Length: 489
Image 1 (cartoon, rainbow, N blue to C red):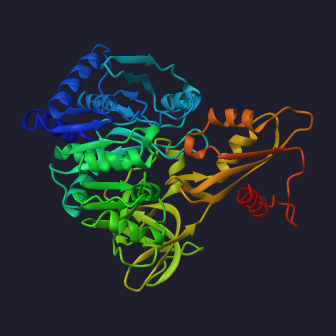
Image 2 (image 1 turned 60 degrees about the vertical axis):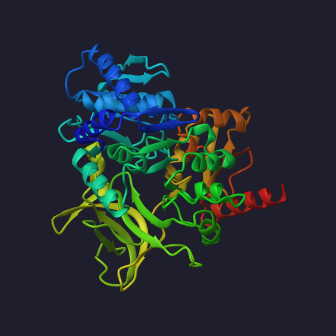
Image 3 (image 1 turned 60 degrees about the horizontal axis):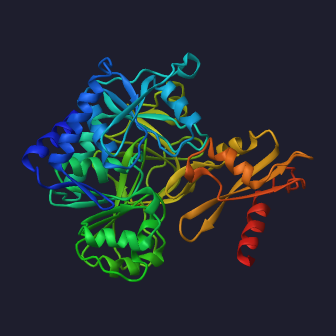
């Protein structure tokens, strides 16, 4: 996580690199001196709350310079920041804050004014959750949260420092770099393209959420800011190559979060003629764990590569046995950057396992490994898919959809999408004589799910759910019928 070392580094840059741009956001820029002044003012406002040292506060991760300054102030003051997605419904965000025992929910306006709303303690929600330890972490991230209540992941301070050291050396990052920050601030990707670059005293160009799909805007930002580092899901790269621009300043390009379509490699080579291409693979629980230097002239989708220095990777078969040499199975990883476990420790048994004295995270990813030790992602061992690069559990989304009182049965399927890779479709059978519509159902869903997990299309009917010969919902038929409807529309 962002650590005391990170906060001290940013503070030093406010003096030593005072006139250098720290953050750009749309048409605004903040120098390191201005970021330092704003952080100092927010620290003073935090002190007026008289919070005990080590307390947890909820800071919805709005992607703005002010929120970054607020998080930095929280780290300085010895507090712990729970940073959930601002797209979560208020009910889900409140549950997270109660589970983390956050005392207040904090937001900051564009003028630097801090708003603090007390979080009502809820012993039922907090039951089974550990109290976060400020001696080990200053940041609590969350998993994708397709149920509307994501798992809380403490990011270890030492783990962040080790990761930032690795990334700086591996990618040859310097204080003269300019990073494009495309992913939401609550994603683990921000540990690299925001916090690692601020630790270096470099510039971070923040992409506003409402402009993340505008190709002309993104291209103007990369060219206008002379961006040198680009990290993002394949959709970002697709937007950047649209129209055939050329960005000669970019020297490092990272694709992550989803499989890169081979047909993107040729236009990417033209768009970024001076860049080194990398595929990086990881998750919130472990941070990055694999890296692969992409040959942009290859015609195949890149593998996930080989483990980072210090990372241990196991491939296990269906019986839990370790696959030695070449083979296929579920991927288990142990990294120097990983969390010690979820804040709700009861969940750890399902996700972590100890082998040969090391704690491994069960990724749920099916991989194949060559004799040479090269790993390729083959699919998922469970119901998870990636929507806009975010792991999303289809069964958990179905649970939320089916919770509507007018829903008799619901099935959620993943459909291919040219822009995002995957989009979700919900097929719903409503109870007879109810007035449920797709619009009303989407309103219900939006109160409980983050944006990426909300089905982009909903079909509501009173007709019986299509079923297979064994009586199970016919997901393949539902998927194929929807794809045909989309093609003929």
